[in-house]
Image (tube, rainbow, N blue to C red; front, top):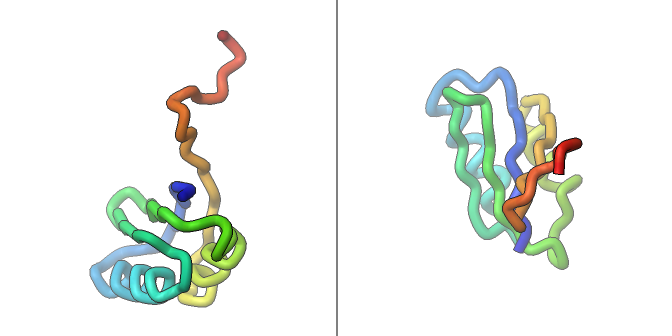
Length: 83
């Protein structure tokens, strides 16, 4: 499973949440979708062997929202110039 957080600006209400969660959540390979509209974020957990991130982003774009990706580091290490 892979987990990503996407920036999705422009969400303003529960209807936005329902549209995105419904459209992305029905895709084969998507394990979970959690929309935090107040933060403009969408957390998606998916099986990368069944669906790729591009398909998920397109599903959100098809709903009418822009998507900016922010991958979550699963090993707990962030990218930093100071190691």
